Amino acid sequence: MIKTEEKCRLCGRELEKDEIALTKKLINRGAVEFLCIGCLAEHFEVSRETLVRKIAEFREAGCTLFDRTAE
Ligand SMILES: [Zn+2]
Image (cartoon, rainbow, N blue to C red; front, side, top):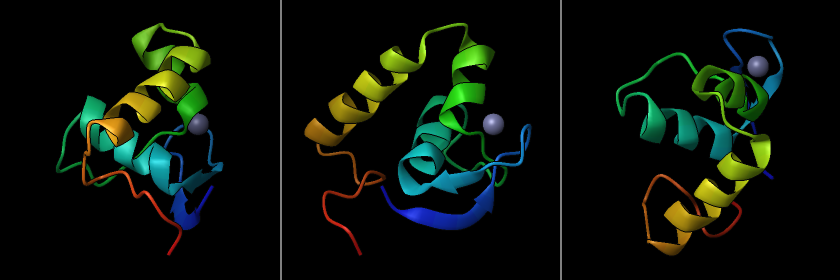
């Protein structure tokens, strides 16, 4: 997981790149505030596991928001 400078808007936890990408994908591509996976799960009333699986799906689909390799 790649850490970033961004923090979750709700809980303040440091975010990973995938969480930022997921926020963009699920909420708004132009989002400037991001949520961690736990807060996203609560927001959408789904399990964390569902979102982890979503990240994998988006990555497999070749979504450019999700990096395949560490930078
Ligand atoms: Zn959070």
